[in-house]
Length: 347
Image (cartoon, rainbow, N blue to C red; front, side):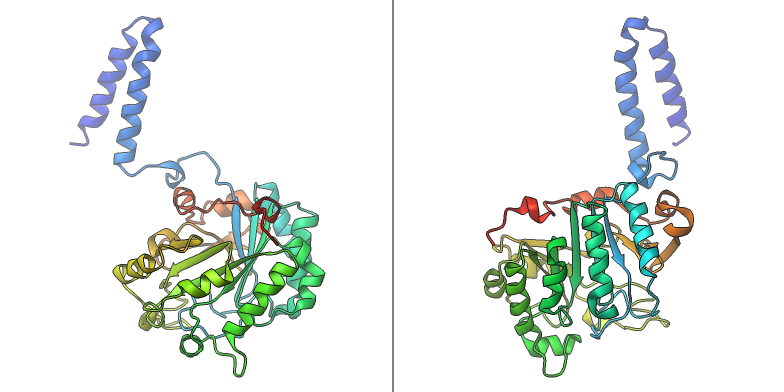
């Protein structure tokens, strides 16, 4: 059957060029649409086609500059496999390369990003991105346990969004998941961080991973009381080599829920206006993830395959191997109002 496709194309092209020049475009336009349809039917769309000359733009980048963490979340999919952290100047050089390539938003994550140098390393990067690179949006994802008010005093002006991971408002469930910290109460700390974000004019966000231990929980009342700008709700995800497999530091199979269970959780919380759901399908390939060596991580095969470092080969060469699905990034709402100057929040 596929032999007929080039023959049909040749026939259409020949008949088009037999017409007068004035009507040539009128014939070519539907022909090009027909050809595009054949490409899409063959699975060749956008940047997923390796022959597509258009370069990917790193609009929004998640930089996991450390893998170290003080929590032991059982489903973690970016585990402490190394203790490496780039020298500050090298990290700044890499961020500059990303900005020159079109980056608009940087999200610092881990591990736990406040664990290295008590948050000073992170603070210096946040300040650099806002003051020197003039990035529209600088954000952080943290478990919140190591953040102190003095950090807000020193660096709060340069931070647009602080996202705190909170998977349950039942402290016993947090302990089961691995967010227990002895006498510290994760939920009480969340309330304190919410207050600091308001006082220092940082947009407050909550991230929750829905798993076997919290899938039946009703969080509507607590989320509304905290009033985050976004409540990102993820379906627990398996990544080979991180939270599954022989060489993984976590074994997350017991945390996994079905798509149907995830949908029921979403349906129970559909009235929460700030809810932003992300299933495994939406999440897996729609993030540009940069590891501690500034390598893009390709998750298309269910594991994290690294590119070469942008510090060695540049952004455009490394990003070719990122596996990034730009269409899914846009479909899941990856671009949103992410600068606190534009959010117009009632502080």
